[in-house]
Length: 64
Image 1 (tube, one colour):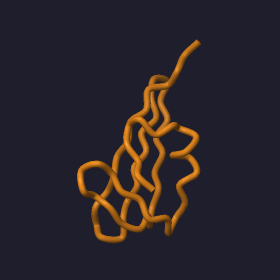
Image 2 (cartoon, one colour):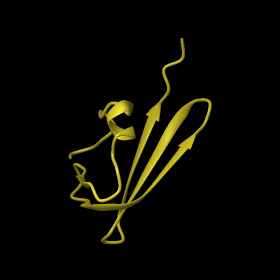
Image 3 (cartoon, helix red, strand yellow):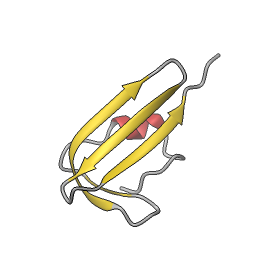
């Protein structure tokens, strides 16, 4: 699965351990840890990969 800042938050929330993901910058691998930091303004998704790399995605929250 290709993920980036344009990936919907709902799709990012569906990524699970052992999924294979990649980004536009050549980082790819199997997910072995997922951290989601939630603030009032944004979500920060950190996907740690089995090859000691990580992919970080920041999503601004839509506030109505």
